[in-house]
Image (tube, rainbow, N blue to C red):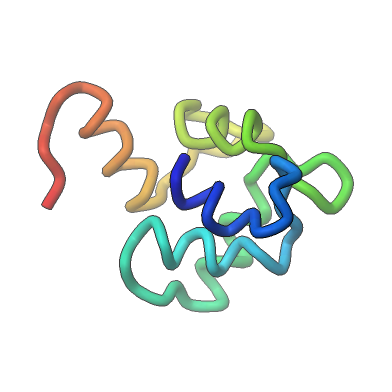
Length: 88
C-alpha cells in the first residue's frame, strides 16, 4: 500500500496506466520490463483508465482478476507475507 501511496503524488487514491511501471518498480525494487507492465495492466481491475487503491488491494489479494489467474512475483510475495513468511 505504501508503494501505491508513494506513486499517487496527487493524493487522489487512483493511478493511471502510466503510473503502473513506477508502482511495480517500487514494489519489487527493480525496473519491470514493458512486457511485464503490459501483462499486468491487462489483468488489473481498472475502471476506465484508472485503478483505485481499493482495486489495487483487491488485485493483490485475489487469485483471479477478470477471469485470469495472476502469476506475478509481487502477488506471490504479498501472499507469502500475508501468511507470515518473510520475503527477502
